[in-house]
Image (cartoon, rainbow, N blue to C red; front, side, top):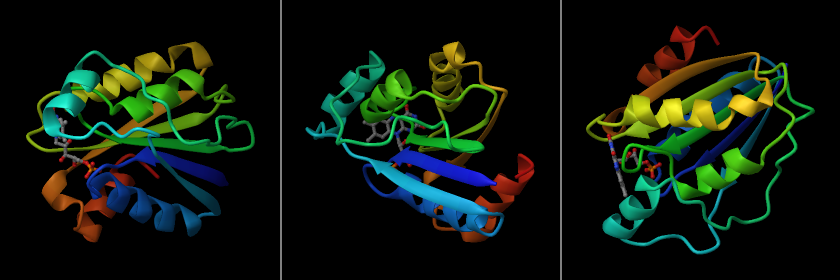
Length: 159
Ligand SMILES: Cc1cc2nc3c(=O)[nH]c(=O)nc-3n(C[C@H](O)[C@H](O)[C@H](O)COP(=O)(O)O)c2cc1C
């Protein structure tokens, strides 16, 4: 199985979860890990939240949008103002090659408010891609360091 994990992380929590998922998937086959980076990262909580609230996109560093060669596609984001981070919005709008594939959506969050809404938004954003099926998992920010917990959440969705 050939997997790819594409994620954004500002303060490192989603990166930790993405790294654990990567290691987990490497045991099952091939896995690639891509971190999205904004060209102009919004700085400061209020700017970040304001942009995320309106599902703004932002310019991101060159990355791989063609997902045709992968069997399993995993997309991760921190929850920002009940939605994905702007860099993830950009990626969702531009990626292709997801037709007939399993897609894993994952998030990390603080209070948890808006987490479901964030994952729903990601799923909706990909609705034109003829995805075979979505599975989702989330990790609270303080549990991102807890490898056993993160792996248990990954296993819970049948990976
Ligand atoms: C701008 C901003 C907005 C946030 N909004 C939410 C939110 O709506 N709901 C929530 O549960 N957590 C929220 N959080 C907390 C983050 O989702 C959480 O800290 C996450 O793990 C950060 O991931 P990262 O370290 O990969 O950047 C917000 C954090 C920031 C910086």
